[in-house]
Image (cartoon, rainbow, N blue to C red; front, side, top):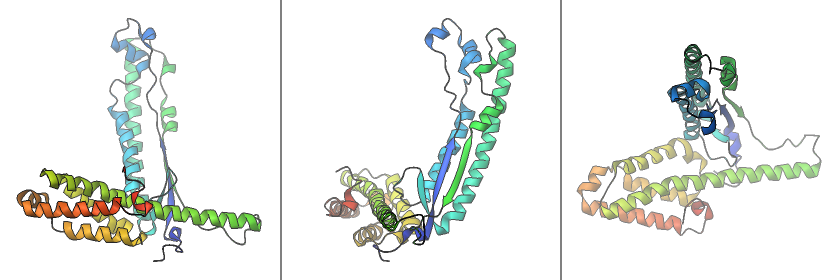
Length: 291
């Protein structure tokens, strides 16, 4: 792979995900509440005492964002992610499934709120005001869960709307953004490994090995193999990951706890790797580290 010339954007596409929903944030001030008992406050303006159904909607929205992140590469613009070609269909189906769950959760919340409104209206007719509550239509209109895939490539040389100077400037922008994505991916992957092996190094030093830490290293190695490997041609980072893999292959927390000599050897190697990263002259390896 040629790190400088390869068009990384030809191997996938961008995804833009948009999501929003009602926040149930409208509340009375202390002066407005006065001496009203809590059950009447809920009937007047507080809307939801039990927010579990609202939290269910937001939980699915959050899960969708994490799902995208777990299957995407680094991209330098917030709100946009890069999906490798072989993962596009899987991501699309995963988001379709989550959107269906979110829509069902919205309907559950809508029906629950309508039932509450009827009960509040019957019990506290003097305090109840329909205008204080969102209607079912307003709730559904406020719900957004959408995504779009965008192909990103260099500007078309035959595009007549650009002057030669503008075309050259756009080509430069494209190349800079492509390089920024590659460099940012190196920094992100370095950080993912560094924070885990640095933690393991400290645990080996003090003898308090955590199974979660060891498993997290296994997880990031697996993610590297399935997501990042073919997009990274940085030799120093590849060597670091190869060393981590060699020393962690077949290693579990029980082995580290049971064998002092083995634990010391692993801790020493993790220390060497973290020092190598921290002292690297390549700022791509160090830019995300809190040194």
